Amino acid sequence: MTLEVKEIVIVEGRDDSAAVKRALPVQTIETHGFGIKQETWELVEKAYLQKGIIIFTDPDFSGEQIRRKLTKRFPMAKQAHLARKDAEKNGDVGVENAAPHEIADAIKKARASFEENEEVFTHMDIQGFGLAGSGGAAAKRAEVGKLLGIGYGNAGAFLNKLNKYGVTREELNEAVLACGNNSTQGKAQF
Image (cartoon, rainbow, N blue to C red):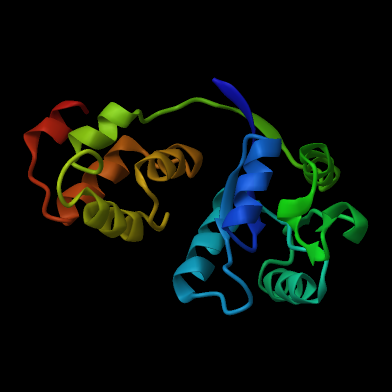
């Protein structure tokens, strides 16, 4: 068991996710800029309703525009902020440029909740369902992730999402079966 931030942290991009995860044990969702895709909106909404979210965008014009767009749709979201000077490196402004302690402080100041996270699923579980380590696993993860409303991820990220979003074994089994997986190996573990 580990102590993790309960809420899902919403960031702009992959580099922001990596920086936030270096600072604290968290799950992130990336907006990939201002043109947020429908699938991402659905993922953020699921996180908002189930775990709560912390919006943590860059302290620049674009970041504030994205923050306003997210806040309008999710008014009870918590807000993490960095001072521009703490997020600037060689003229580039972004969460990814901040020191880990600055990022951790910003998330804590957003009144993040912490919880013990017990892993329900292991890597062996997702392998048993053909979601890792086999041909077609990536496509199957994409399909199962869509059915569960947790989105796509590589094997490690998908495993984290299963555990972080509170997916039950029954829900995973049903989603895998709906995708046409009749593997008894996967069902036998549950």
